[in-house]
Length: 121
Image (cartoon, rainbow, N blue to C red; front, side, top):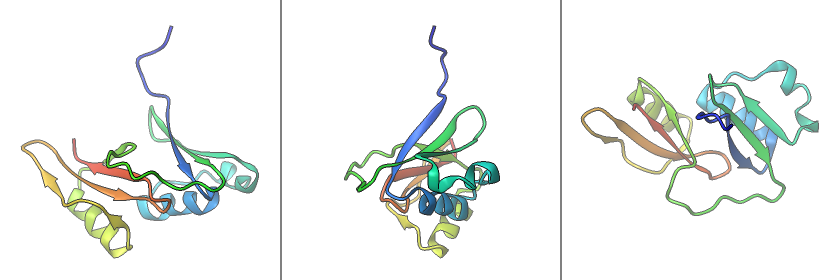
């Protein structure tokens, strides 16, 4: 039987090492030293993120699509601080901060041009 949970989310990238470094520096994701030491020999790199992991998958010659739908979202309880940090780091922010009664979000692009979201809900 298939379990009702997501195991991993795949995000395509052009350069695995460069992308792993970017996700570590900009998003603050902790790099696994064991996995990272072999990064030049790996086709994928997985960040453990609780029950669902995030897997960056290298695709030679990859270019992102022009989709306006984010591939996935990342949760924060400090959305204004994250947005300010992204601005300071030169991250390409694609939308204004949108706020509802119990939910706020904004979209941004990673180093490969993939559209992603930060949200509070």
